[in-house]
Figure (tube, rainbow, N blue to C red):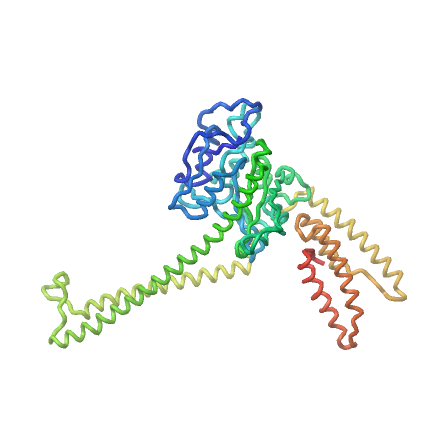
Length: 489
């Protein structure tokens, strides 16, 4: 079944309460029971509410455009547990999660935006199977107050569920609202089995991926978007127990594709809107400063001229009397000057703090900053990496020794083992990375050897023969990037 959450789990993750209204509506997938009979309505639960009550997502004018877009999309999608929004940071080369909704405390929440609790973790199904372990994993993914809460950290391509899906859809990520039309983009939705991905020995271990599979988020699809080079993807988590015909219907697939583009466009709009608001605020501040300077100038010079003309200081209002005498304009200007000096002092202190913050940030970047490190291997993975590297380099070293002995008296040939060491590092330590795939490793090496041999036939004088060493990689490296077969060699 695919009903949405109520007050229990929904209040900790999805939209602000102003976006959710509860209605009794027809479920859009199979019931959460083992037979076709409708599930009974349970009492309120601490982990997840009754699956017979579904909150619908209605846009509210006072909520930002991204939240409204997600609300309209989630309302119209069938068979979806929830979604995640990821943005590809071109600077760091990593995928970063974008918060989708308002928290109950007024902030934003990252990670899963839920439409309903997973069927595996739904308390209503306790009489059919053990829901304790799925509920434990579900809490780690959705409850920020949980001690073991797993926040969505930035991940590189190929790592975790976002990285794995991004590696598969990367070739489509350059299409979208950046150009005209989508003729070369498939309108199918390719669902991946998350539990199979979590059990894949070639996939780097990721704790969040493991708990997604355990919590019942076992079917996911990544849909890319590209809005003026603002690239990313929306991950949809489908109900594996729902009706596959409805889930994969043309109407639902089309809605999923268009929702991805709309959510991506709204996500791209948000930083542009924030920059515009900051710009308008700065312009208003500058305008006020100019007005303030003009007022001070008029008070200083205008009041002085009137005082001389009237033969005495310019009188002020009756409220400015002090000891029975009216204060002069100069006294009031003096007070304004004191306030201006205080403001300047405050600004100088703030500038000093900003400078210290930037200096500390620069020092932090020199030490690596907060950049994430690749996930560590398990002992089993480490052992397999050792065996693979040992066998590979034993063969290569023996082959190199044989070639050197056979050509010692003639051409004196040998293998260049250093690049092969870098290649085996990719093959055995970063197996799911795009550059580690057999297609890249084989075709890139073949192309590099071919270009190097062809360049060796270009006639150069003895003094200029060194230029071959610069020309060959200058041709090979951009060609690899163009053909999509980049590899470390």
